Image 1 (cartoon, rainbow, N blue to C red):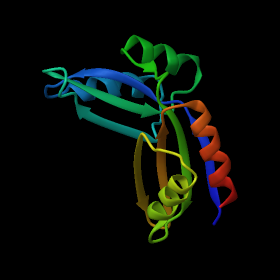
Image 2 (cartoon, helix red, strand yellow; image 1 turned 180 degrees about the horizontal axis):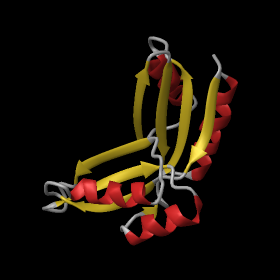
Image 3 (cartoon, rainbow, N blue to C red; image 1 turned 90 degrees about the horizontal axis):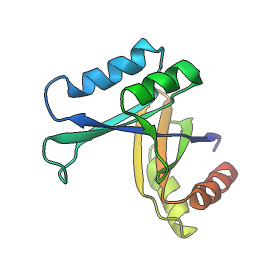
Length: 140
């Protein structure tokens, strides 16, 4: 199975849990020319009235400057891989089974498919685990 496996930096920011809170953060990135491939946002139940948004990629000096100004920071505790592959039934099950069989624990997984292409973002707790996962997935 041919897959494109790359490491990605994930950026995160706190957002106010109110109408338009997420739009403000995303607009700051859009104004800097960011073409985001991945966005996930959720409430932060441990912080009343707040949420969190994760995005990738942030590229170039102007996007980095805008991201920091909007409250984003590159995560230091989340080590992520982007996996792009042909969309096949059972792709997620196969990849997660391979990782589990290798003793790799996922911190998180987000994915989607449109037509014939699937893209998954896999998160690990350490850079070493992300590296092991990358090498493993490239051999599948």
